Amino acid sequence: MPAVVEADSRRVLRDPRATHPELLRREGEAYRTKLMDLAATLGVADHVLFVDRFVTRSELSTWLTAADIFVTPYPNPDQIVSGTLAYAMSAGNACVSTPYAYAVEMLEAGRGMVVASGSPEALAAPLTQLVRDP
Image (tube, rainbow, N blue to C red; front, top):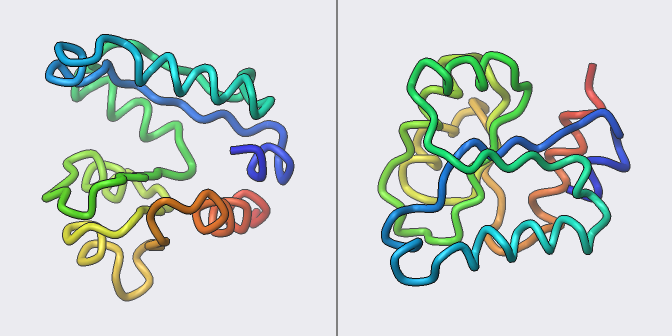
């Protein structure tokens, strides 16, 4: 996100989701707190909006319609599917993802971009390219 903000300071990352119930049971809000602390440390807290709740399909549609870019930075390559990726593609969003089977298949042939997992630089490159492209 720091590279994206540097490329276009008007950008805001919106994360409209609650912590997964299983993760919440095991770890509480440690993961969300870690992300919020990281945003502050990186100096982008004013550009990240965490919405701590599950959104309805209608709300998700509104969020995606308002978005320019959709990102699925899943750390687990065994992720099976992403319904939100399908919704984002149908909303006309530019899509960037880490590699998992569904994303690789859906974003092939120039329909989106797949980047290396675990690399902020690999993720930042296409995002900054997209925000600079009118």
